[in-house]
Length: 314
Image (cartoon, rainbow, N blue to C red; front, top):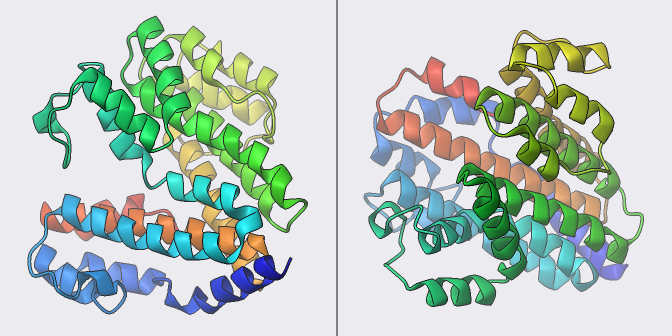
């Protein structure tokens, strides 16, 4: 328990370092990517020595910074190490997914960030070395069954969430963990249903990938939503069984995406001195990095800030 308390204190001490809504809006007004990086240097010391960066390089440096912080908490709370490594893993999945897609001949080496061409056996060995053997096997099975590349990303996320439920037992009934995982399931399932229908993905594939338990919306309701003829009817059906009424499928997705940061803000700022505070901080930090990356993309493409700031999850 001492480790949990110590880690919680450290997480609570970091709460003032998260970027505020106002600071994010100021970043969105940057003249160009170099200006944005300069504004971020005080917040992310890893950027201090960098003069010019691409959006991809900026994102990777920010994620490296996140992983370093996650490792500090893992060392401070070894009993929660498995759960915290899974939170960290969310920041590592994209590289693993791209490596698997190269292995499956879905992506060419030139389309993969930072990866050189590797043989099929080497790709699987690299995935195994990074701890992604199960995800790679499960995703390969789903891809070979349905031939839909986007489902590979879904499998990686699904396997991570299911692993989090198993890891929860190791930390016991700590504040925030159960609700956090419930929201993770709801975000995953709701997004899978609505995006899958909108993109015309095989309904059998979508139903196979639903997480059947642990969320606030039962799997029978989600299965019935999948039977609707289009995404608008699916939204109407979900409203009929208690999901908040909104104007569009994207608004339903957004409402669920925002639940985790909102809930973890509540956990984090109430000052829980256990693993709930750590989960709150790491989830909010990862959300911050995603927001900064969205802003960087918008600034780099010289888009109107009013356009790209609408997609920030706050």
